Image 1 (cartoon, rainbow, N blue to C red):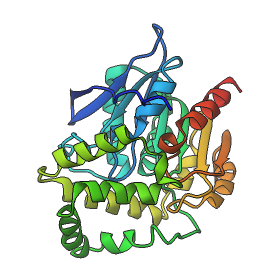
Image 2 (cartoon, helix red, strand yellow):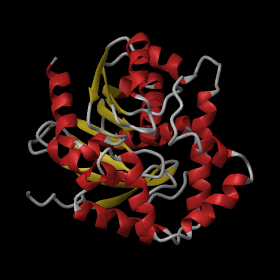
Image 3 (cartoon, rainbow, N blue to C red):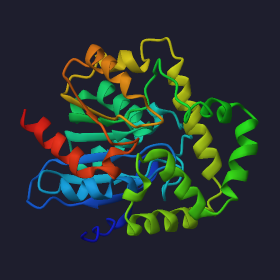
Length: 295
């Protein structure tokens, strides 16, 4: 087995409403279109390392740490909702150029949907990997999230969780998000543990996680015109949605709603995959995206 390529170097971009830590994977040819990769709740730009390598012949990739995650401080307006995080992506895209090929995993899918629906001029294609959208199917692994979001409860639980060993936290996350945790290369595990250890001293870590979780869950009970599935109907660009059959957090049966609400949707369900297909099977996601782009 070949060793995985290293993580992309990190740089800080000072934008109008925030500072974002961003990893950039330049395209292998000049003048390739930009792509933006958006991570999930508690994740970071590291979640896209391997897919960014694979798509270098097609795009010039940019993976930000959302405000309050990874190495990015919270946005100056304090808005941790999916719409608030999407405004940060608008600022990033204004810097790197548009339209972009937009990717989002889990929470990042919810954020990407906000952007694609509200600013269609900025998005060429939309790719959602196990997007965190309202679903009729609860799972055993996500049922605890509304409990953590209860005011006062999360403030007690999250700091206690952050006191546990960084290695244990990373391995616990992998156990939940991968169908087969043994697929994580040792190098990727080490990179993730190092990032968590370096971020443990940041004073805003708990607040950012809780604020983002609560903002996401509010979209699940929204009945207004900007609720997620209504936003999906406003997306004009071609959309690829990838689910994992063994995903314990987002039920793959939600795929049927995608074709009802997105006007130009293509759905792929990977049979032996969990919640982070771009990490567990980046080669399959890359192949599906290249095929989607040709079609």
